[in-house]
Length: 288
Image (cartoon, rainbow, N blue to C red; front, side, top):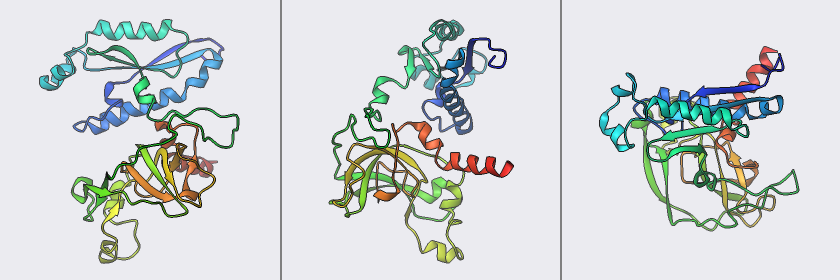
């Protein structure tokens, strides 16, 4: 379409499984999540007259849909009809303002564009005149709890579930002078998480790796700065940031402020640009 300079609309077929996790079908859920993120990344094609959107229905009454546990289907309001999906497709075709959009279709809420306004409130920040820093936002202050939860590795194992548990820990304040407290909004899930929980990222033998236990899990995340140390000047409370430090699988994490990357918004796409994006970038450089 772009090469022939013919405008048009492309609709990718996603699923609600890409919007919220399905622990019983993780590969399917992750794949559909990738379709959604890929679609959103194609929004700039609108400048060339090409609109790419994705439709994400809940369970549709088809042969495949009827294989799903009926208790789960009923909890979501029952099956959608194929007509609901077709109507959603026409919605995306006819609304020429939509590009890179995700249309979520459910029995409970009908047609809703994702992210919803409630979801966006978690990470939206106001734009500033400066392109170098982002300090004004919707969160001039964030309430810090006395306790928070995080995923901690307690046993070295390639089985992530067996190696980890959710711990409730006390938030230690005040901050160290050069540190920052970040409220995690999105964390990245990596195949190498199981290499980390099995101790393969530590030098030495298994006994030496075990000496590091317990340790925090999670490689990268995006979030909002909730508090900073007295010596931190370049980042303000409420700033959207990305981080590539251990401990991303948590509600809050404390990191050296110098390791934080300023971002316009704490969007999930930013997470993909960290570890995974860097890996892809290095691969492309090597191919060249």
